[in-house]
Length: 132
Image (cartoon, rainbow, N blue to C red; front, top):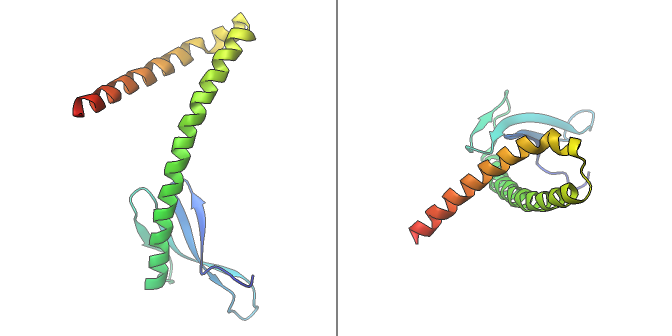
């Protein structure tokens, strides 16, 4: 790895484990030394073990948190857009191909979820209009 990164982020649900990438060891092997655990939601960074992040590493971690939040926000919007596509695909499948048994299997759950979604959307949209 000629251009090895200074830090490696092992992503997890709420953030990441942060490792310092070390090749300057006796065996000349790539070693990952855990230096912190990061929570993306609240921005907390907890140092781990004896390896305390340097100021430069802390800046890199902070930049990673900002970038990760942007990625997650974009994914959320994409998920919502895909949900619209799935609802359209589901409506077409129910109309064209679903059997009575298949419809009976999921109809109540789907109707409740759609009702809940509609209620939330109507309330949020109403609040948006009232703010204008």
